[in-house]
Image 1 (spheres, chains in turn cyan, red):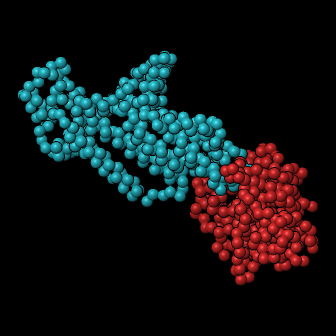
Image 2: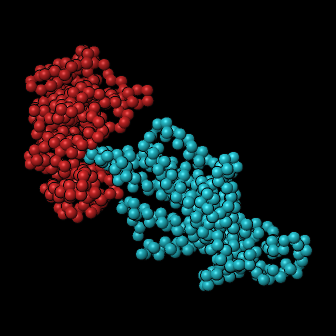
Image 3: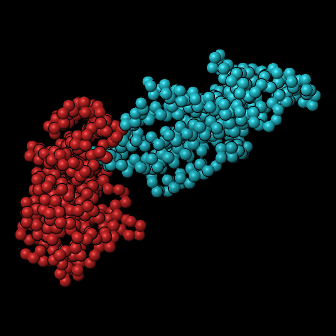
Amino acid sequence: MKYFLKRAGFMAFTVFAVCALTFFLMNVIPGGTAELILKHTLVGLEESATEEQLSQISSRYNLDDPLYLQFFRWVKEAVLRGDIGTSYIYKKPVLYLLALRLPATVQLAGASMALAIVVGVSLGIYSALRENRISDHILRIVTLFGVSMPGFWVALILILIFSLKLKLVPVSGYGNLENLLLPAAALSFHSVAAVMRVTRTSMLETLGQEYIRFAKAKGLPVWKIISRHALKNAMLPVITVIGFQMGSLLGGAVVIEKIFAWPGIGSLLVDSISARDLPVVQGCVLAIVTMFLLVHFLVDMLYTHLDPRIRYG
Amino acid sequence: MSLLEIKDLSIEFPAGENTVKAVSHVSFEIREGETFGIIGESGSGKSVIGLALLRLLPANAKVSGTVFFQGQDLLSLKPSELRKIRGKKISLMPQNPAGALNPVLKNGLQMEDVFEGNRAEKKEGMKKALKLMKQLFLRNPEKLCTLYPHQLSGGMRQRLTACISLSFEPEILIADEPTKGLDPEAKAGAVDIFNKIKTEYEKTMLLITHDLDLALEVCDQIAVMYAGEIVELDLASKVLSTPLHPYTKGLIRAQPRNGLVPLSGQSPSRIKLPEGCFFHERCRYSGFECSRKHPEIKNYKGGLIRCHFLSLK
């Protein structure tokens, strides 16, 4: 229990630190915020923005206050009333915008994660069992490409092949399973490769252990040796990597969503950054950080479940 | 009547462009009910023999020769047939109990591994196993089964692995350096266990060890190995009290209570074995013939010995 409290406190501090960093960094970017807000609200009338309108906007959002005061006010509202601000552009509460966009991101990141785990782990085991045979070498070369190619490039290649040439799936869109296929594949390609490589290594190490030989000496069939004795031991480093991949998935989602016009918080974040819509940026970062921390917490809990020797306290 | 008949067993491992000759042309028989010991210094090939009998060596090992057990050659048996012998008819007591127990599985489950088939058979088997555990000086075995290996002491783990190896009532028990790494107290405990296995259960055993005290205590026959060959084979009492081969003499002199006189030199490289007798470089009686001609193993005074001089008669 004490551990959980400590852990929760640490997570809260991390969230706070990330929010503070985002806030101040966003304000360091050159360009007047009030001006940018105006430009995004008055489409086509950008030239006619007057000094008067600028100061009006500045005072409405308290943009002339010192930064620490602005940040302090934001934190106070967030903690006391659960209000993390209102979008400058959409004029809607940030929480509402997040609620609208979050399901799409969770769907994409979840599908990619599932792909990374299922495909990565099973290919990793297969590769370990066929160590140094042809199929193992082929898989290892493919995964080398996988970990080396950036996600956005993979996305463009996939669109080129499967949408434009073969016309199997739509280029972009949201809602159907076929819309999900390409973004999930592009996003998870790197993670599948990373998970596979670590599964292979970890599995090979585990299979060389003495308890595996003893299990063989007991007369167990191969599948039982793998499923009962090897898998649980080999999974520790794998779930560590999966936890870290979650971070890169959420980060990668920002770009991939933009490419596939996927209506998640990634594309919301990119749009908000260019519009200097600070509250929304803040909200997106908050959501992503929280998801990342929760996944890592889950991973740590899984450790104790997988290996009884690990105890927190 | 011999229960296990090993003929012309050779084991080689590829090492780059060379091959390491771990065991060359070893033949011996184990009679029913007897305890056969193999002694020799580290790297003499004794453990490899134990593993080869159950085909537990890594896949790159080249094993030739025959191992007859109940009319079947273990080395050419189908894997599915071999599984029926492993752990059931011939079981292995592993070298390092701490490593042989899977750290993430409960002791009970690891014990159950040996019993296949339906639930009732498993239950019946476990009942017998629990009884056996009690007899092997393990108190409160039911509770032990719900614990993990890291919660046991070294001696307890040793006894637990002994129980696992014995629980299916195998016809032959291969014990691979059972006293390696144990403190003197646990060693004395191990001697008790083996005496018990021998006298009460009347098991046939192959005991691989470099612990000469243990060998003298429990073995009926002893084979002394050097550089992958048997150099002397006779009744245990004869080998250990009136050794013939210079190497055996050296081994006995190197015992702490015999003055701890180390054998000079090192055992030869197994990639390029010396011409003549493999031991001649370290042998104090070495003569002209010893560096030219490799000695054959010969009958002498009821035992077997591999020495040109039959060790000076």
